[in-house]
Structures are given as C-alpha cells and as structure tokens.
Length: 316
Ligand SMILES: NC(=O)c1ccc[n+]([C@@H]2O[C@H](COP(=O)([O-])OP(=O)(O)OC[C@H]3O[C@@H](n4cnc5c(N)ncnc54)[C@H](OP(=O)(O)O)[C@@H]3O)[C@@H](O)[C@H]2O)c1
Image 1 (cartoon, rainbow, N blue to C red):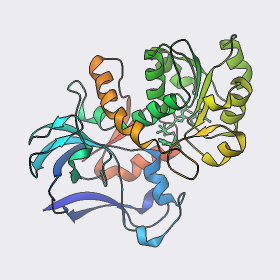
Image 2 (cartoon, rainbow, N blue to C red; image 1 turned 90 degrees about the horizontal axis):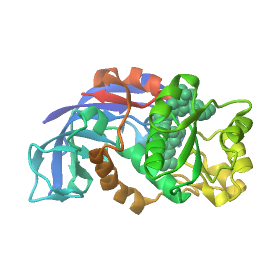
Image 3 (cartoon, helix red, strand yellow; image 1 turned 90 degrees about the vertical axis):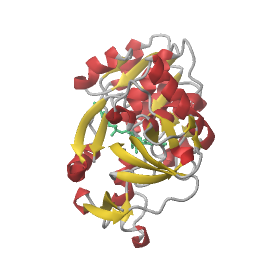
C-alpha cells in the first residue's frame, strides 16, 4: 500500500526535503496502522538533517517526524497501549512515532495513546514532545507550589507547556519572550519579560524575593548567565539545549546528547499525565500555524527561524 511521506534526501536546509510516495511498512504482530491527520514539527526534526548531529550519508534518505495524531486503521492482534485497549477507528496520538511526516504510519501499540476528546488532531499532534520535555525539566529542578521559576524561551513549544504546568502546580512563573508574545504568556498565568540586554535587572525587579529555579529552553549564554546569577542552587537550573556548557557550569542537562539525562521513564509516564491535564482543562496546545504536508519546506523554514509562538503542524 502506497503512502505519502517526507524525506530529507541530503544534509542541508529545507530545500533537501522531498514529498514522495513509499510502500507502507508491513504490519507486524503488536503493531497498529494509524492514518495520520496531523503531525507535530519540532526543532529536532530539522536539526537531524541540517548536520547539527553529524552528516553520516548512511542515514539518508531520512524519514522525519516523531509525533502525530490520527485514526487507527488496523490493529494486528488484541492490543493495548499505555491508555488501554486499541480498536479500529480510535482517535489517537502516536508518540514516539517514527517517520510521522506521512499520511499513514505503522507503529508499535506501546506508542498509541487515546487522544483527549476535546483536542483537535492538530493540537493533539503537538502535545507530547514538548509536554514530556517540560514535565521532565520541571521535575529535574523540583518545581513546587510557591516557587518562583524563570523560564527562558517561554513562547516556544516547550516554554508554553512548562509555563502551564508550573502555574497549575502553584509556581510563580517569569518567562522570557519578545513583546508580541507577552499577552499570550499573561493569559497562561506567567509574568512575561523581554530577553536581551538588562534581562538580569528586569527579572530582579519582578522577583524581589529571588528566583528558586530556572529552565533554559534556548541554550543562549544569556540564559545560562542570568540563571546562575539569580538561582543560588545550581542543581535547580536545567538546560534542554547545549549540554556542553552545562558540565562546566555545574547545572543540569536533560534530553539526548552527551551528558544529558534522557529521562526515559519519567517522559514515558508523563504522556498519560499530559492527557489527564488536557482533559481536566488545565493544559492546552497552542498552534502557531498549520501547513499542508506538501508544503513541509515552508513549515521548516518557519520552524528554523525560531520565533514561532506555539506549534507548527503539518496536515497530510
Ligand atoms: N533536550 C530535550 O529533550 C529537548 C526537547 C525538546 C526541545 N529541545 C530543544 O529546545 C529548544 C526549544 O524547543 P521548542 O520546541 O520550544 O522550540 P521552538 O518552539 O521553535 O521555540 C521558539 C521560541 O524561542 C523563542 N526565542 C528565540 N530566541 C530566544 C531568546 N534568545 N530568548 C528567549 N526566547 C527566545 C521565540 O520567542 P520570540 O519569538 O518571542 O523570540 C520562540 O517562541 C530547541 O533547541 C529544541 O531543539 C530539547
């Protein structure tokens, strides 16, 4: 059976992305076919073919996309996913998916989670990667009720999740973003602050009693330097970008890459917690823009520009 897929045919910019057809992988016992209605994009997707993580030619052509939402077409056996039994016709999230930029994927039952009923496919396809990362980051620096937390990069995919989770747990959140995102951040319960020159003084003014923990979701020197000035316990500073400098600074680093804690168990467990919070109305996915799958190169140019306020979603 033929499917439409996106592949990176070389290492480079968005021009290397090609929309083509491929034979759907043969379904194995324990696997499910999902018709993809929406696929979430994430910076890792372009970093993989841009050469950030090497340029081994044997990884080409490279399928892309690690999260999707869609409808179950086929179930091979009596299968259960993390949220329970899986049936044909179920509306689901697939995470982690492999090659989610496609109109259909074959995936293990262990990656198939019931979609929150109140979410659109677009929203649901952008919930898991940023959400599980935000849960892991907040857990790593032990954010709790009453803490003041500084979030660098509050308007990005991970930032918007981290703000909502921390606010719901009773933290006072100060989050950096450019002015155009400040109303959105306020709506989510954070105090927005402009990044750039003078950030340290601006945060001090907003947090006269100090900052208990900081999340660096950007990887800039500014984020690291300001966090170190404001947070006395370096164990309560975490970066999700650039584990390299974290080692020398003595702050925590999470995610893939050398020295980063992958947090496999906490992230797997976070999937159901995220669904629960969406169902309870305390968490939402903010969609910045949607693109037809055929326009994946344009979507990736916007993604790589690094100033989206929310998720960029592909629609097959
Ligand atoms: N380690 C892990 O497990 C893990 C997991 C997920 C993501 N990541 C990485 O974390 C980073 C963020 O991911 P994401 O999905 O949140 O990305 P994203 O949605 O593309 O983030 C874009 C946001 O970054 C903000 N921004 C850009 N420059 C900034 C600066 N100097 N200071 C503060 N904010 C700035 C932009 O806001 P303005 O438009 O307001 O500037 C924009 O809203 C990426 O590098 C990604 O690869 C790591």
